[in-house]
Length: 381
Image (cartoon, rainbow, N blue to C red; front, top):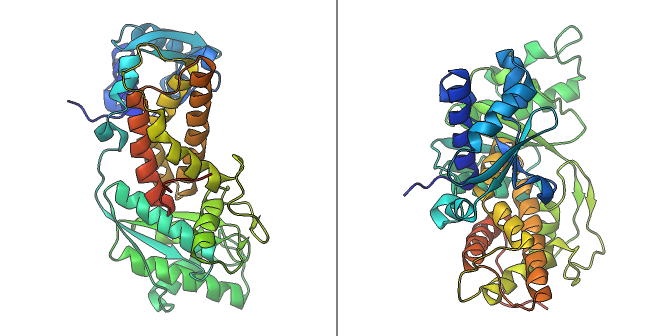
């Protein structure tokens, strides 16, 4: 039985169809991706492959999209494929096709190999520390060896590598002696990490001496480097419970936004509160599982299933972009859809949701909570 996730299955179908249409190797079309449609009336999943590939192949996007829609519509498990706009292909999937992507083994992405170093420009800043811990948890969920590296002393080798990129006539402009020392200090940590790791993620502070692209250019063909600049967050002194909730607030906000946590009522029972939303939803899951499988899904349950099936893709993207907060934001959206599906069930006089969908949600919440650094409470009111 295949362990391919829901969206990996769709990507494979798209790559195979485009290979048939164009006569190219399927590998040419790997990684084009697809997304859940914004409007359920348009279908379940939107494929942009024709728009992406048409220019490269010298073809009309709409003509390629029409051929792709015709090919995908013949694949077992795809109920319909329709052309929209300049070349989008919208798919509606058979429930069993979606179900195959909800098995526990299919929810997690294919295991990766390699060693990841996580470097912090300011190790005492909680936003950086919490982001780094979440990034390490994401990497380990993908199968990578991950560690948060301690700062190292500035080295001559790193300075020699970095300085040609800095200066009035250089690619990244001039720098004061203080700025240059700070840049060399950060790059020394990256340079040291590159000696023993395949990938490096740097969490830096927005502003100051940070210069997007500088460290990547200086590292060259060494380890893969991704840099994420984080806004500072004013985080008051907290007890253990408050600290856990504050961490959720930090990871549930966009990385570039500043966040003032002073005076916030962390456990305020509102669904707009991400900490409450996640804990409340996780505590409701077991009560929402129906005894018998649903023969027909309502729109809310279908939407929930489609998002649950995206967990592996979200993990991979969160790692590849150095953006672990994507996992927390995804969990919040999943929680909202769980509650929407619950409300839809109540409106039709039922109390439960399809058990296979709830099983998938439990797998996702269990793994996702471990990544964002919290655990589901037994009860929350």
